[in-house]
Image (cartoon, rainbow, N blue to C red):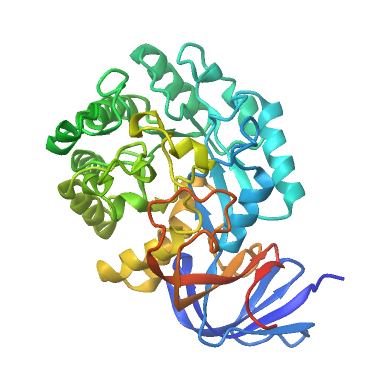
Length: 430
């Protein structure tokens, strides 16, 4: 029988949603957080978990994880990747709509959620397609997709060329009270590129993707956001120009938020080195100036959240010449330690650092996740912030191991995860 009433004792409770960072016990009953601090008089724990020396955090929320199911199960599955997420403290995943088939019907959205529920691991929240088939021509039935559980709409990596269609899409999303998740991409600039356009890409003979690919599209989007009033979230921004535009938009009180991939905060175009295909990502690794601006954007709140942009690939996908390999990183295993490292390097307290992975992304998605508030679902994780470990083929939880961080020494690791009050992962004695 699963334990229904238990206490996590002697841990450091860090909850960004409440600004909490203090030693405390947490008491859980029937899948929900019953109390923090003193044990209620009528509560008797069936189990007590000693969290001495550990951080007790809300379950992490990842704004972008491609699970490869349906359509590419030879790479990964919902079962394999939701398990990997849970092993890394990630209890909620947001899935972009570019699955095969595309999430443009309620049936596909419901399939993802049913398989996520069957896995018994991290919850999957689907984004619906903004246009049918992501083709940029006819709007998807956003209202029906919202009823089917979609938390927002997006056209993923398929830019909508027709500005009139985009304006109508924003209007429709606003009328459905749905946020639009936008990866700003100009449909023409750099469409055949593989690396950041600059001196390095020229020397390497790689077709370039200029920074203006992002900033031109983002500028158009901001004008339409102002016109329609739609809530918008900018995904995976990578350039200094984009940070500046979003900072200005926020100053003008436009309803916008933004995230950045963890790897963009640690790698630059220089890391392409000898055509390292593990560094083939989209958007591409940019310049040092861009990385500095992204870090500053995180530090000053221009960028709200950090995501993994998890894209697992089988080994063959990275074995061709650089431009012929598939872009993306298997990133669930590095999201937490990289974000903890960033927090140390930009001198953020732990409560703010964990906010980039919990309260902020949950707020963007409009969910009740990412919190330890009393009465909420008991999704939480225990983190050993002093755990030093090396990323190698034996330490991955994801099925796929495509990562430029192989052989890096990392600090900080999830040692236990609870979803709806049920322990789904543990490396500690209970």
